[in-house]
Length: 358
Image 1 (cartoon, rainbow, N blue to C red):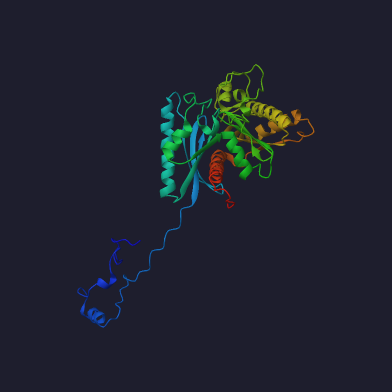
Image 2: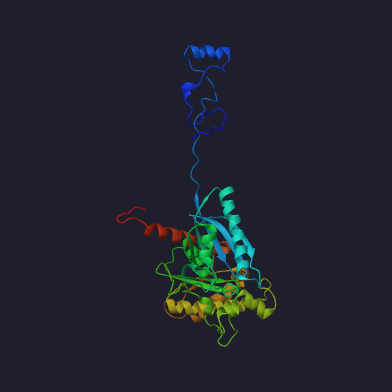
């Protein structure tokens, strides 16, 4: 479509035969009078080349205990932009959402104006417990959000389809897609961060459970009669080995651990991993999260030794604990994986009967 405001380009509806020679100089008028064309460089401009379609991405959102994060993830799993805001303490539910929505708006603007991409869907990984597809979320470490209707609010804010899952289940998708569990149809993913979560893949399928909370290994009991957990039980892995638990036990942030704390945290995670490997016939546990990755070799050595001591069955003997290969990008790539999975499933669901195309 031509632009009537662009110099040298005819406006839509102009008749080229109606152009008179009245405004031409004498030489050009003579040429027109002889029926010969006038060479006007502007009048013979090539038509504009249409812009290529914008590449597709998904908006990935991570709901953690101390921060909200968002990013843009391509269909190849590349994280091309990211942002984060801290979770405020002692505020009302709407204040949390206002903070989240502001960050989302910024990322969506950058997608359009800076990256020139089209957002197809939204994927969310959230600390639990949650209702299926994040219809509501109740993160243990965000007390103001109890059955908060996250999915509906995000749909209202973004005007896009929203798909969600537990944060550790999202990490499991990411690690199986691009990370340390590539090629493994059976494995467990754990996040040891502000809280502790888990996701389990069996026979190539991510387990959901009746309410979508399958794999919540943070509530495996590792210290019977131990510290009170936010869930109400005592001695949960989350109550003993999470970042908040470590800070409560030591009086210091988990970024300043003692050697003994790093060993103890690894040992408790190794105990939980052994129980899962023994129960579910697994040989690989992938661990991410700021606490585990921050404690590094000391944590992973202690966890592996404990796993070896407690996984003695023929099928679980030799099980490995390994760090997430995606490091601190894992949660957002995982949320992106949730979005791409949801978009594919939706496309298949609306495919006409008999359509066997892609």
